[in-house]
Length: 210
Ligand code: DX5
Ligand code: ZN
Image (cartoon, rainbow, N blue to C red; front, side, top):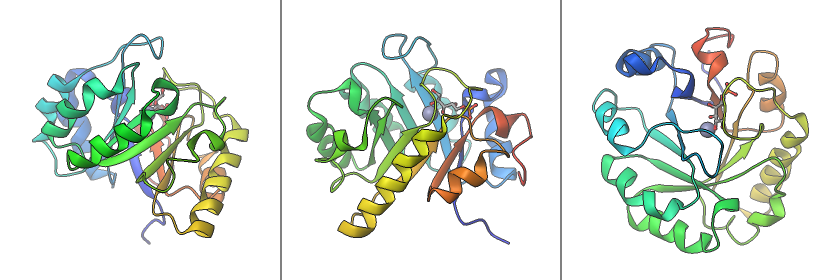
């Protein structure tokens, strides 16, 4: 039976010494996109990788790349990731003033635009962006690290976003990122999530069904 949602395993929990094999694993286990966490040590207290490394794995798969920018100046990174061939580029609403311009720029570069919000940011902060974005990524942990516990109240935002989407005919998908495992997956799906991100549970093999 095919699943009713999209799965984007996060390579934050992959074996960084063998990313090609981790990508192959995502393909074998039926992942739909590859979620790539970019952290700058400013917006979040952790550092990961940048466009050079992502470029080196782009040729390893045809799966779309779902880039999650947890950086202070997202405008500086749109072009590098677009040039590599990343399908989705998602930035944080908390990291920028001119979010509308960022969405337009991502579209101009031929990519799909996502906007994300940390647990303390309400859906109302996205009011002006919802008609134009392709994805809303709801963080269900405070960003920066894999393996944290899902904050259940964040799922109310998924319900709210899906309701707005239906009522106003918007086309964005809703993604949930952080603390998704076999136990929390039913709750995440029940809220109406379209795209599920999973790092530690996916790569440790405990996300049931994968
Ligand atoms: C956290 C990242 C997530 C992370 C999720 O800041 O944005 O994508 O990889 O990891 P898990 O699934 O382990 O919570
Ligand atoms: Zn992420």
